[in-house]
Length: 251
Image 1 (cartoon, rainbow, N blue to C red):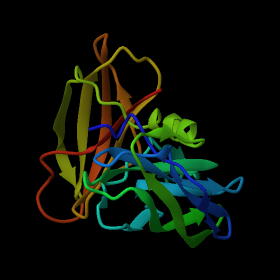
Image 2 (cartoon, rainbow, N blue to C red):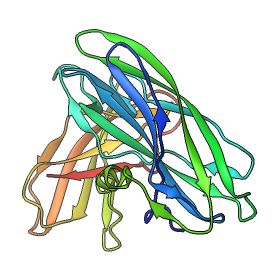
Image 3 (cartoon, helix red, strand yellow):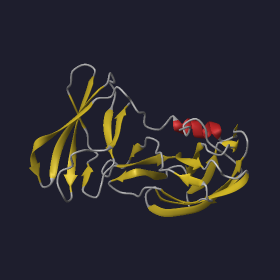
């Protein structure tokens, strides 16, 4: 797959909600059929406003992208850059201030016809400062299919946000263990992984309807080369989860 190597960009029209602008980016002026490339939904928020990660946390709503693509072009899942914990401290949420580019690999069929193809998407989000406002925009961009791939003016911006995606470490070894007791469907879990990091560390969970990993984190003493954390898991229904998905954070 070549999605991490190239992306596409053209003259795109954008729309604006009260405090967020949205536009659709591609990172090559021309793309060959049969390639998988990245698109980017660029959200720019007014100062003091933010939008949310795929797990918004204790409040908020994840940004959604609904594609309208021509035959021969298919969209993969959103690649989410690592978010920040957002204030106020009493209600922790995960999201983005100022701006974010949500990255989506687009796969082109090998028999996709040469020439221009219009790509459209409806983007919806929740933008918050002291209060929250739902926003949406219909964005579009033209993808040219041709005999060679040429980088665009937006390739650098998309490349910058690729570097903000979670890293995959082949040497990462993570252990998770439950701690007794269980109280009011709340249970402690200890996460431990190999790392030489000495700064702040955390785990941002991808919660489900059955459970939520609470935002509070406790750093525990651990051997050199190891990070050890305690988090609280709240169960809503069903059995206690046998696995958790999310992003390990080191700063």
